[in-house]
Length: 194
Image (cartoon, rainbow, N blue to C red; front, side, top):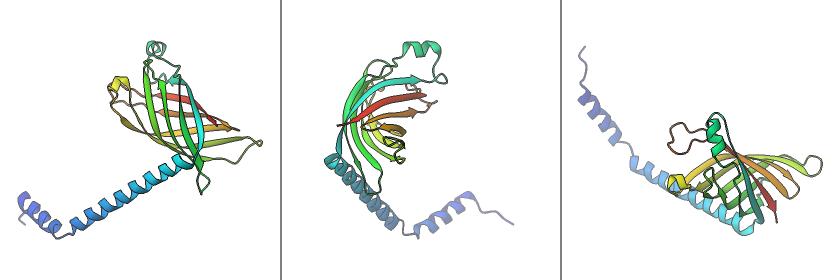
């Protein structure tokens, strides 16, 4: 049995694909993405317009030993002092949504801005005033060691809420391939409902 050469297989594949209505799939995908982006923008703007105001106070960064030497951890800034402002609302499903912007001192004592959206799911109240939350944040940030070029972040968020005050945290996993940003960091901040 004689085998077909690669070129014949390639032309057969091109012929089969050319008969598919790829252009209509591309248009459907383009309109779907546009609709999703429009819905996300309207959702975030609704939270920003109608949400309750929050004050953010940042304060601590833990550099994990698996990503940093003892000397690095002594040299790096752990006091991530800073602050910001946000808006928060509980949506129709009972989930908390927030938009926020804050600036804090990063590991090199230089300002790091971050702005984003967060969604969290909370437990029912425990002991009439405490609840626990978990969720995610999607944000844009910039760092001095990355020449303040904005970069996106998608990170988990965990919260302990006591009345109007929330202690919040997120973790940046270790990034083995990154040149200037190692990861293995736990960031802790507070939020006060105004």
